Image 1 (cartoon, rainbow, N blue to C red):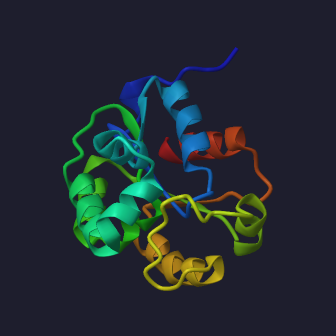
Image 2: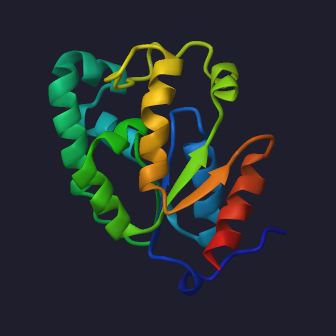
Length: 174
């Protein structure tokens, strides 16, 4: 039987940051279940608003307008008792990241580039903002320092199951 954590022991929200493919959704759903929180995927919010896949939204708006809209979406989030998973490009928006911090601690799910390459053999239709290069090594090189800068907590995901990562996050909150 899974142990259910009492809400009063934890921050009002948890915010998972990291590269696409880092496990934010998988780990986030596990955390939400354990905490009896709601899981919020910001990419899905955007897809719902536009009623189309993220890649199509990006194609239709263009990168500049998409980035403005994504930043605005982050700054308008107001949730309680949620595990929030913003897109990997959230780290491009200082005001958006500041607002996310006001919602709860930002937990960086750190994944090494070789592991990301295994997890993401084809990411061409994921709706990825490619500001600093359109290949995975370039994106990783550009975003890794930003994730580290904004992280309140860093969890190395190497050789760990999603369940174990979620448990490490819960342990770090105590």
